[in-house]
Length: 396
Image (tube, rainbow, N blue to C red; front, side, top):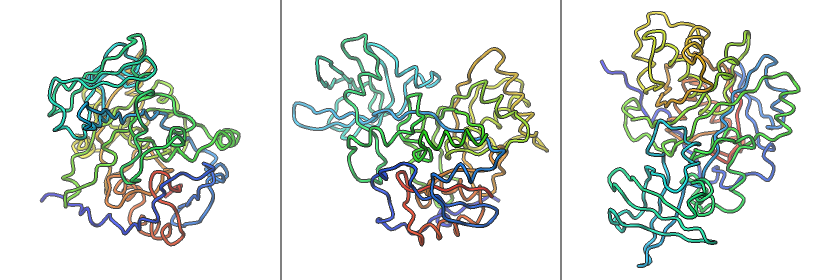
């Protein structure tokens, strides 16, 4: 009999006035809900260093949001919105594709597509720089970009013409403040079209205090895709098709994960998805000896192991596979739902998520039915929700 997880069981009523439309003036002045061993307490985010276990290791996602919304206007006056999704060369690190010169091809979603004919070119010009976009394949959204001067990188060009891709549920256009506030202070590698929002509360001062305490910090990369906002539309959540996102992990990440007696805490669901995917990649390598770094949403339930290896063995397999490589590029569609057994992460720092979303199911998988009490408490205690909202530290 097919397993069923009813999507509606992971929904809740979120009043519009609880959605944070703008960030707080001070990043680390957000509320922080601490859930530890079944107990809930209210804290401030700048108290986080004192709340973390002494043996914690924090993993951050250092992706950087690109200005992925590009607005073109035809001579007829029709506006075409081109939203960058991923470079056509999916196996190339996105940050390298951003350094392309002269031209590049991307898969995009296109607003007002019916007004843009296949093979025709749209133009933008500013300050002696011109960006041209040619629609190659309307069905897949393949767009060819070329520009002049050709020695500029694609990153430089879209920073001139693009706009910050705020989440659709904010129902507003990005302003100048969002350019900095919809980025983490430690963002580094360009390629995300949505921010890893759990990290938005961190400041340089909070990070210094964490390091002073002796907590280990490390940085990996998952380029957050637009699929993170895709709602679950199926009655059975397991019928939902998970989006794929590019992940990049380094040799140093593996070495940090192999340190003894450390409690692994993911900063955000994207870091958690990366860490758990890395474990399953190790399982695949143990089974087959060699595999592309690709984790599907069904891999965790389709493995052939009777007893799964501990994370140490899985990570050693990945490290051995890397040999002289400094980093690995892969992609993951991992779908963590109630019943999933976490192999790596023992704590999670995360915001409060949309009702009935894939992220809501991930939180429910991590803390069990206690998610209902956590969210009820947050609603009753005037927490701010979603991307620019308040934070939580979950230590089941």
